[in-house]
Amino acid sequence: MNIAKPFLLMATILLVSSCNSVQKHTDATVSLKNAYKDNFYIGAALDTNQIKETDTMVASLIAKEFNSITPENCMKSMFLHPEKDKFDFKMADKFIALGEKHNMFIHGHTLIWHSQLAPWFTQIKDSVTMSAALNNHITTIVKNYKGRIDSWDVVNEALNEDGTLRKTVFLDTYGKDYLTLAFKLAAKADPKVDLYYNDYNLCNAKKRKGAVALVKNLQKNGAKIDGVGEQGHWNLITPSLDEIEQTILDFSALGVKVSFTELDISVLPNPWDVVGADVNQKSEASEKMNPYPKSLPDSIQTQLAERYEAIFKLFLKHQDKIDRITLWGVNDGQSWLNDWPIKGRSNYPLLFDREFKAKKAYNNIMNLKEIKR
Ligand code: G3I
Image (cartoon, rainbow, N blue to C red; front, top):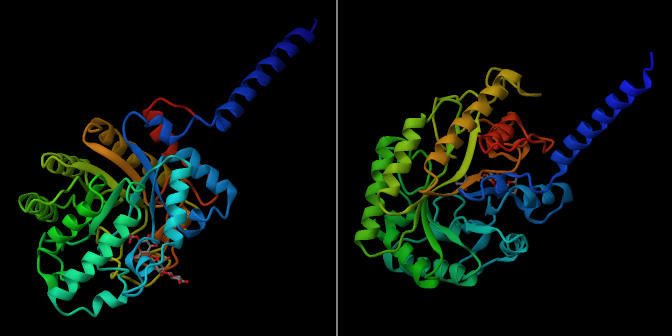
C-alpha cells in the first residue's frame, strides 16, 4: 500500500489549518474596536505607564483593541491642578497625544469630583471663592484641551445612594447649583465638547431617580448636558439585566447619550455586600475573601464570560442609545479592584488576563459579532 499520498494530504491539511489559525490570531483587523465599530466606541482607562507607553507590547494591544481612552487618574484635580495657582498638564498632554496618534475618541475624567481632590479646594469656605475657583479650574482645563477632547465628565459622583446630593465642599460652599455652574462653565470653554454627568450604581432605582432629577434640573436651568455615564462597577450577579436596561431607557428618555464609562465585573466576595465604587469603604484581607490568589477556576471564568456576553447582548439591543463602552483598565493586573474594598487580593474583572492574553469573556463578546479568533 502506498502511504505517501494520504500522508502528504494530511500534512497539507495540517499546514493549511495551522497557517489559518496563526493568521487569525495575528490579524490586526480582528479586534474589539473593529468588531463593534458600527455599534459604539470601545474604550479603556489607561494608567500612567500605559500613557507613557513603557511596554511596547501593551501599547500595541491598546492601539489594536480600543478606539477610545480615558485617563484612570492623571486628569483628576489633585494631579492636574495641585495648587490654587498651578496646573500640571504634563501627563495629561501625553494622554491626549496618545489618543490623537491613534485617532481615538478621547474622554476627559474628571473636572469636579470630591475624591482625589486637590487639597486647596477643600480649604474654600464661601460661595464667592468657590465660584471663582470653579471658574478658574474648569475654564483653564477645558480651554487648554478645546477641540482635542471629545467628551468630559464634568461632575463625577455627586449623589448619595438614596439619590440625594452628596455632602461635598462644592455643595457646602456653593449650594446645589454648583452643578449648573460647572456644566455652564464647561460649555462656555468648549461649546462643542460633549458634557457628561458620571456616577456608579445608577442601576439602583433610588439613585437613578436622583440622577434623572439632576439631569432634568440642569436642563431646566439651561445648562448643556450631552450624556450620562453609568460607571458599571458590577459583579457576577448584580445589577440584573433588567436594571441595566431600565437605566439605559430612563436616561435616553431625557434626550441624552448613555455611556458605560468604567465597566469591570468583580468575581470576588464582597465584605459588606455593597455594590458600586465608594473608595472610602475598605476592609481587611483574609483567605476566604481572596479565594483565587493564583488563577481563576474555569467555572468562574465561564461565569464571567457569560455575564459579559449577556451584558454586551443588551448593549447591542440598545446600540442606538449607547455611545461608548469603556473598560476600567486594560488587564486584570491593572485593576483597582485588586485593592478595593480589600487590599492585595487577586481579582479578574477585565477582558485581558495578567499576561495580557484575551480571556474567555473577550471571545464571548467577539462571538456575539460572529468574529472568531
Ligand atoms: O499617587 C500615588 C503614588 O504617589 C503612590 O506611589 C501610589 C502608591 O500606592 O499611590 C498613588 O495613588 C494612588 C492613585 O490611585 C494614583 O495611582 C492611590 O493609592 C489609589 O488609591 C488611587 O486609586 C484610584 C481610585 O480611583 C481613587 O479613588 C484608582 O487607580 C482608580 O482606578 C479609581 O478610579 C475611580 C474613578 O476615577 C471614578 N469612579 C470609581 C473608580 C474606582 O474607584
